[in-house]
Amino acid sequence: VNNVTVNEIINYIAQKGNNVYVIDVYRTPIERKMSEYFEKLSPYHFNNSEENLNKYSIKRITDRFNKLFPHLGNGDHYFDKFDIANPTNFDFDKKYTIQILNNIKYIKLRLCDSKIWASILSSIFQKEVVLINDYQTTNKSIGELYKRFKDEYKIPANFLELVKDCRYFNFYFSDEERKQYIGIWENKTINEFKPYSSDEYNFYVNLYLENQYINDIQTEHYIDNGCLCVYCTKTRNYIFDCAKNG
Image 1 (tube, rainbow, N blue to C red):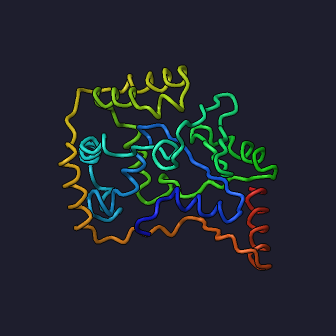
Image 2 (cartoon, rainbow, N blue to C red):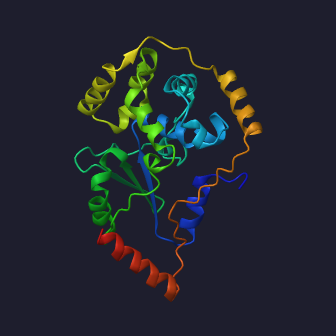
Image 3 (cartoon, one colour):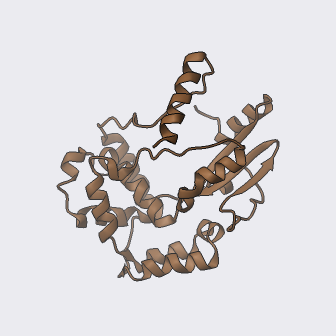
């Protein structure tokens, strides 16, 4: 939808008298960039089938990733999309925060805490919540390549400095958590690498959008449009029971 921001949609729904919760998730910066890169590896970055990409060398995959590194996985909705002037400091004990503005409840979670999300959300909503693992890159046909890349990737030293200076990383991770995270990657550093400039990256994006031929519409996600008819409600309860029972 052109000329409409996500924040305008959220506020419009809230103004209609709905009880609105906005759940946003923070992911560690390097892993987020990796995930975003592999999400479009086939239709955008190499314009090839996943079957053929599995034959590519890790060196080739890594070189392209490093050229794109500073331009991938940037931004945070709390700071960039929701018009929240002063985001509430993240609660490192509870592992989440809730901030209420204009009757909208903004919930911030971290992907690194996903194992306790069911408990967190059950507490917030005062109703039992069960999590379903869905749409994991490691389960796709490209999953083995993704796993090898994550295992073998070594980060250029200048990129690690970008991570250290990231405002979101410093906001959502405690001093000790940042120290541990950086420590892991400091053991996997290599010489500096020169990535694409902003102009080069913009040219690159325009080129892959023109060249792409693979349909990248995602069909694997579970989608619930909220219908309250008898059939949908019955099916929703059935799915919940299945998830609860493993």
